[in-house]
Image (cartoon, rainbow, N blue to C red):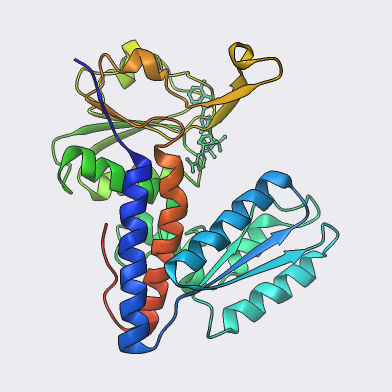
Length: 301
Ligand code: NDP
């Protein structure tokens, strides 16, 4: 068997097209323009790249987009004041504070200050609680697991995963745990694994759906994959690539991709799998927030 490749770039483009069309309708019919505010503190180069690409995608979707760039020495109180101002700003439907924040700022406090109905990252306790209790209709779902679910629905050709066994490797608050809840809401039978799990290869071999969100390059080997399984590789790891020349590097996932092609029914590549979906779902969440404001139904993906 040779796995089919789950094309995250193509699916992300489809999501963004739907968002763009729905945004134009919202503007024409309800005079509502989705607004997103991205806040960045400090000069971390990777964060700056992410923030720029979020702003660019938002503009392409037809959103009102603003970026607030604050110096690294900004105090926690100053940042909280800005978040509170954005909470009150009627032109803003989604607030995203780029993480990580400098050490002197309490990330948790900042996230919990964002109004839950503008928390398009889905990190506020209210949204976490809604997802955990199955209130997926009104929760904001974190973008990476939300995007992974879109890819899974497409790969499996269905929205109900009844009878399927899923294993999620990784229990972070931003990927593993919300993924567990989303799979459960889709009726999969889910196990979540982590660094203290015993017999991980054996456990993974039982999975019809295998999600890896670990942050360890190619940890999941090809022979951990059940024949025919759908493999979602969330990991993004930069490793040395001397074969490309001195000092060069390349991106790999948490799954040994080439090895897994043999057993997997379908698999996401890295790059080009889950990565592009994350930013697309951020736009989808912002549109959803604006749709709620306008009292219209948001698209599904
Ligand atoms: P975290 O570091 O927060 O969590 C990693 C998880 O993996 C932890 O639960 C940890 O277990 C578990 N783990 C670590 N080592 C092992 C091991 N040897 N065996 C089993 N489990 C292990 O990572 P994130 O969830 O934030 O990210 C995971 C990966 O996904 C990273 O590569 C990251 O870059 C990528 N990512 C990609 C995104 C995208 O847009 N595609 C977005 C977000 C993340 P324990 O809890 O016991 O420590």
